Length: 133
Image (cartoon, rainbow, N blue to C red; front, side, top):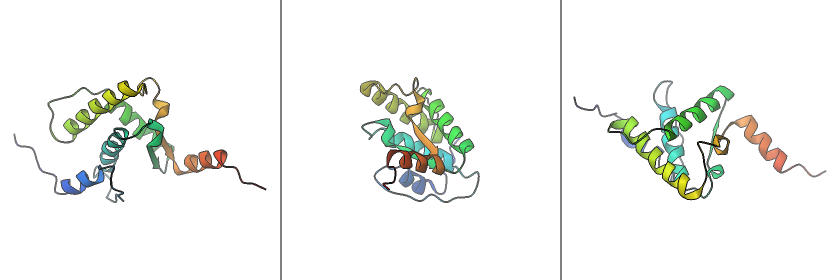
């Protein structure tokens, strides 16, 4: 069985490159969360600390889903699967190696993954930089 080529695959590949800023707009069910997961894992490969990588979404439910999917991805072993699943497993393996080298312990401390809502992100900034009266 041959693997189907996704028509916008070149755009997806650009979107997961942490060297570029991107705006990802697409309809529901088109794979935006999958692209975000791949981008987040790619960013972890270049970060000094995992807290330097931030994913922000609108709802707590979406933030929890993204965190859960990243933690699940980090538990994947390198597979022979092609396409997205293979790419996800390969990146997860690289991130686990970096995790081990840096002593991040992300699977034991998933709270180090900065995935939040806009509101909680802004509140965190406000707590760190209170207004001067």
